[in-house]
Length: 165
Image (cartoon, rainbow, N blue to C red; front, side, top):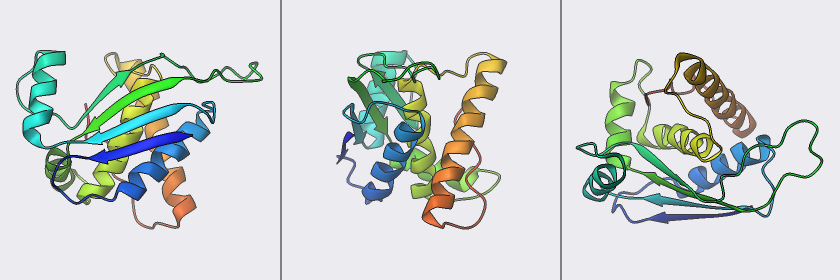
């Protein structure tokens, strides 16, 4: 799996954890090991520009996903998942820090960025949360992936509750 993490935000973030959780999520979703992903960490001004340009919504947001080859997790019957470019995930640590502090289970900016990375991966794989049933599926999968990664890393305590909507 080729995953690039590029921090352009000026904020120190745990890039290794972002890389690790993205790799974990993609492996669990059975995405081809030669697929490519880019994660870009930006400041609030850059995120606000992207949010306006692509979503026509004001203000910065926490995470945005830009799919390329529209890869999907293979079905259980598929022997070999397709290979390709997943796309880009853009994260904003300043928004993540605020959300982590405001969450019912307060957590760090880095924990929120890990959650948002998985959220972004799922969007790249075609998951969405517009409808209640889609939201239940996506957020359930998101929690399972974050919890699984945290358990594998030996991290204790509750995993962050979803703060993205």
